Length: 289
Image (cartoon, rainbow, N blue to C red; front, top):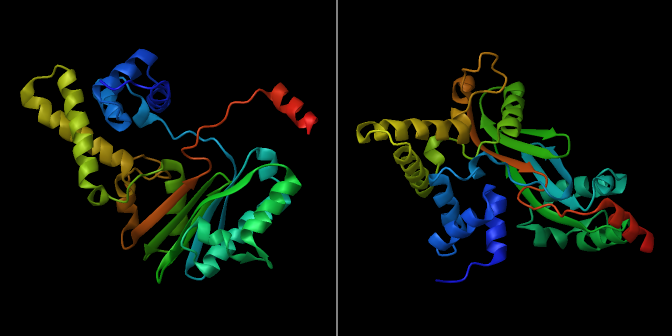
């Protein structure tokens, strides 16, 4: 049996919230595969992973730009929230969003080689790092170009949503974008969930149902019920619309003659573990500069 590293145990604990021994045992059973270990823990009812949001770590902002039928969301990171409020940092981030809309670079690397306000983007970023004294990075962006309708919603500078839709009006687009920001769906509809993801979730639901000790003749109904809940939680069209006062109307019923074609949601620092720092040490380090 391959040795399980401390870093793998820590990663699994961060993902699931279980104790050290449970994490180690799950990794041993899964031959070191972290995703399989997560599934094992979920089947045993030990993991809180499905209910946890991704860890928000880095600071910075989500910026947007839209013009005509083109829309962009971009995440630009800084080390502290103080820098995220800096006018020059914000101008840089918003300028990058505009540049992505105009030039449609393939990725962040291609974006870094473009020219922004007369200077190379990477040179501009480096100059800003030198001036502000913090690391600044361009993490990711999303660009939509369509013949249909676009809606963009920013929740402060921490969450950005872009929705492409047909039919309906501007208010409908804004409502759907705000819903995506609040409800964080993973998929558009149950039909868009990958077959392997469905199979994986069903296997977990079956294991959970069997662990409950219920009779075999009702296990199938329990699993079907759990899968319906999964679709209701994970799929935009199956979710209950956040502005429905009665808590009964699904998003798909709200659309009527309209349809959502695709959406994207960016949350600042999503999936990056935040570095824990002692404030006194941080101040001392600044004084040494």
